[in-house]
Length: 345
Image 1 (cartoon, rainbow, N blue to C red):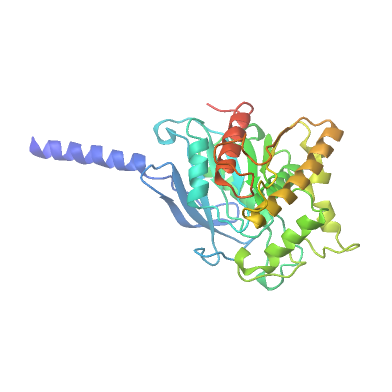
Image 2 (spheres, rainbow, N blue to C red):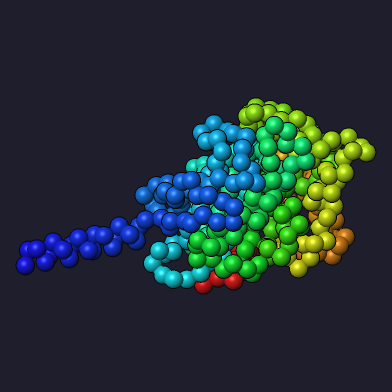
């Protein structure tokens, strides 16, 4: 009798352990899973795994990153392990200098999606500008667009219970990631039903925005080793700046027709407080205003939260470029929008 109880208890314990393990992922689509998912904390909603890719075999590194691999953070909806539902996916692209798997990104996502049946994926982007680089030099291939769109998305669909269609997929990003979200949605509109930007640098014709991109190439704080000014988009000087012009989201909005579109930006707030963050946000706002004007001219409906110093947007929001209360409100509002359009349980 005691032995029977022991066996039964063991089976129950094993089942409970299995339910709380994160999903195991298979290789595929040119990606090798070099580190299987591990929960980031006891809440067991968010896990991190790592892949290697021949499209970007040698990414530049920020502190804490490992050479030759890409960390990807995934937040699951409540109840994912308890049922067999399929869920829509939000791809969330970080800015620079930032990493996918930060505590801030995790907290913003978990808070914004606590009541949403939604999977959120944060892929590594370092200083990528979410593009296939023109002149990567000694780094070797830096085909970030191929990596994210042709490898990460199908890997997620093959391994998690997703709704693997346009109707089950949205994309958003902050700063450089806002550029990436619009760039990807414009290049591959068949993949996404909604696109969003939080203080994104959307207009590469804006000279201050070009200077910001060049800064991320040259500054070691944006990743090591640093790269040349023409590494990502080629020469920024006319008449050699064709790639800059071709990949500028603000001027290529037509392919967003039929897609949900949302933009969020402040004005930098008090310029005497944290002037660098205020100036960066002011430039981002200028690029969003151009994008909004082009969307209006094309007759494409969109939502634009131009919330100034942030005082009426969210408690603690300062209207600056990396104000966490601003970004929290941005994400919560964006999730509410996409869940009205995405197919979900």
